[in-house]
Amino acid sequence: MVRMSEDAPRVPDSRAGGIQSVGLALDILEFLSGSERDMGVTQLAAALETSKARIYRHLQTLRERGYVEQGALGEKYRLGIGAFLLSRAAGKKADLLMVSRPEMERLRDRLGHTVVISAVIRDKIVILDLVRGRMPVEIGLRLGSSFALHATGQGLVALAFGPPELMNRVLARELDKITPKTSVHPDSLIAQVETVRAQGWATAAEKTIVGINALSVPIFGEKGMLAGQIAIVGSIQYIAPTPSPEQIDAVAAAGLQISRRLGYCGGRSDR
Image 1 (tube, rainbow, N blue to C red):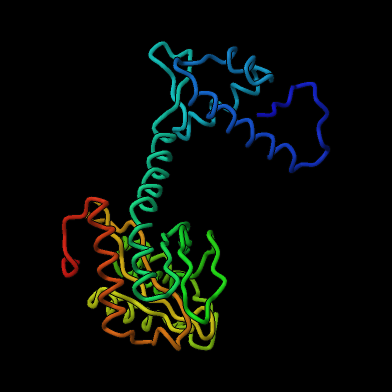
Image 2 (image 1 turned 135 degrees about the horizontal axis):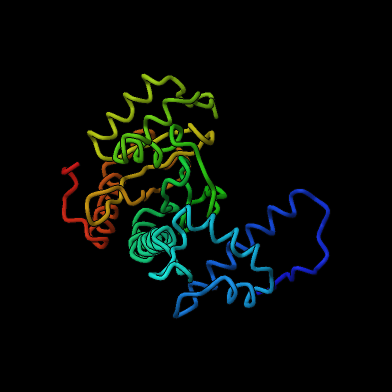
């Protein structure tokens, strides 16, 4: 890891200070995570080759946000509950991807379509993993791609089975008209979500990309909370607005199997 000493030349750009500040905060968290004992301001300053004043200011901000805490004597610092919660959230995503991959490959082999695992991040559907399909027509999905909740099958699943506040946030802002078939009326979106909740699966034919559809079902975690979504993606020539019973059954079975591997004890009709 490259350290910047206090005497090093500074870039005369207001953005540089912000970037360096974020970098130092991350350096502090990384150093504390690798330490077996609580660390004082002087120790951190020496280890990170900067001033005690800078270290102290950053520690106070991190402490206020819960990412570090002080020990019993109030002199030294260690990671706080905020850092723990972040690591736990990252671990859950890793668990989801680890248990999903075999089912994704089986689903691809059975139906031939590209299979994706997604989750809601900052009120967007984000592709976390994918297995390329074997159909004549494929689309260029990439890991990390993000899509609107109201215009994707995965997003409709998230709105149907996720926390109510997610739906409230989506309805509180204007819905973007992404394609001619994107529904932007709140009443229509509410009706779609109610249908998805009743049937347990969702499609959004040509609502994000003309000619493309996705069939998605929820993935639940140990306590029945929404953990993500699994979907097949492809041309509307092969995934119709109302998919075939074989496609619905196959995707639903994969979603249920992944959910059970995450500790979910319910069945398809429980939600």
